[in-house]
Length: 312
Image 1 (cartoon, rainbow, N blue to C red):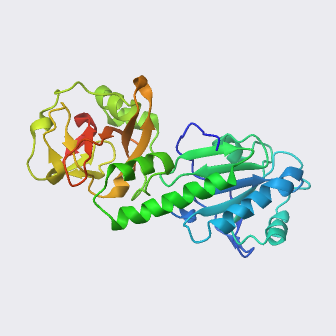
Image 2: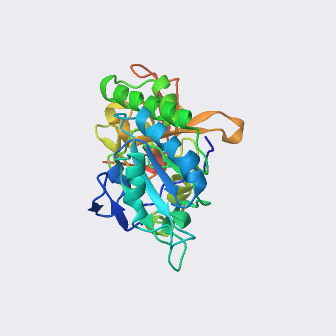
Image 3: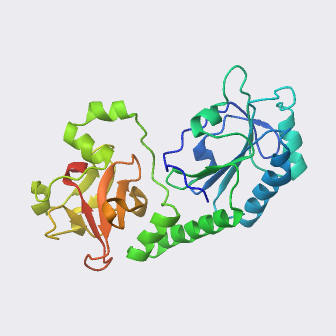
């Protein structure tokens, strides 16, 4: 698949929707598509490629991923030919392809359709794929259906493993980093200006711009009293003191998070290294990195910037 900048997916602003049976419904939100991977297909009724390749590809994915926790939606993205690409075409097209999924109409009268500006799409047919952590991982005219099927299938298996085969291990972490993270318990999405107003310059540098504090700069390295360590930005509980250990690395270290869904994992190849970055899965705050050299039972070392945490 063509990778995107992996930014957080904006909330949908399409106002006109029909449900899987063709009935009017309230405006669709991303959360309505479930906690797993999400696929949004953009089309126009008069677009030949939308019917020749786009819809067949979409149907292939829907059939292969039935029951796998993947959410699908279709948006008629009208940036031209409004007299042909009408609201009435939604149910007509939905019925033509036998798709029992939500269809939306993004009219684009007098301005660019919201999904084009929000998701930076280039026309139709267009496929958007969002991972369980809410990040856009694909946005392009074409999509490799087999790659999406494999990706979403692997993520579903990983999610089941996370709930039934704790403690975590390095293989699980790498699977999440490569194929999509577990669903977060909630989301906290504030603007950069809002984060700046809430944080000190050093907190903002580390937590919001992926900075690193100086080693051994925090007394938190030697703090082992009972309690929990919360995300500095959104106050989500991330680590318990019971999983903390003295790694002598210069940063607070833990063997595992309080629950799988509160930490997200991302491959990091900066500075000529291959590492796995950890972020808060609720607000995307940079926490640090995780390494496979920790103590049992997980064998993991979550090496976390103290400035990204607060003790509760």
